[in-house]
Image 1 (tube, one colour):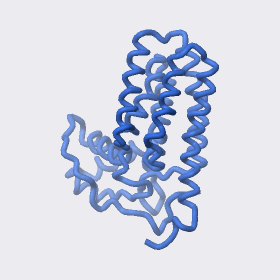
Image 2: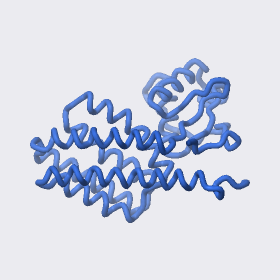
Image 3: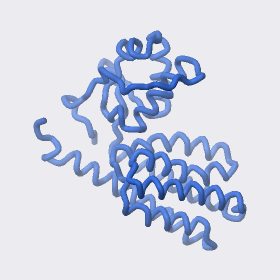
Image 4: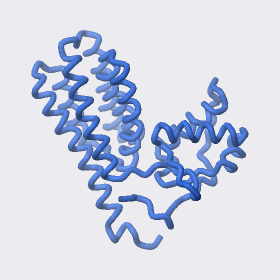
Length: 240
């Protein structure tokens, strides 16, 4: 299944403005800027990136652009199609079902391992991240809420002190983040869902928390399925 028809492909002729110059190599700066544009929805799924245009807009060599592009391809945010070009990845239902299935296994394992190690530090930091998430959702700051959501869910992996587990999560989280941008699945009603997850994560019943992980991730998949149905419906394929 593909969300983007070939005839609907957009070319990134003009990038959003970027004002901050970071203390990085040119390749790293370009990669970070493009990553931020993708994960904020400013470069939409299916949009084509053209090396020559990017080199001109960034004021760097095509070699630096090419290296940055391949870094984002490795991270799963861009895809190179032979004889067609480089595009922002468009996630289909099958891919996200696979991602969420793997995430379910990882998250259940992470909480099983960290459960007896939860201390005052864990509770303080997890509470802080939850409050930041709830605040952005209530303020209806959609992209800020997505970033806060990812930061909230990253903490159990960070706290686990398992570097391999954290590395796998960071790879998956790029696609999860992008799926949030695509589905725009953030709103006032999600506050209660985040609160339930948060309270059980600080509770005393690991089995109940594991059930909640399954339920929470199923809600995420439901948003993806709704997006797939909406995108594949006849109405979504009408003329502009």
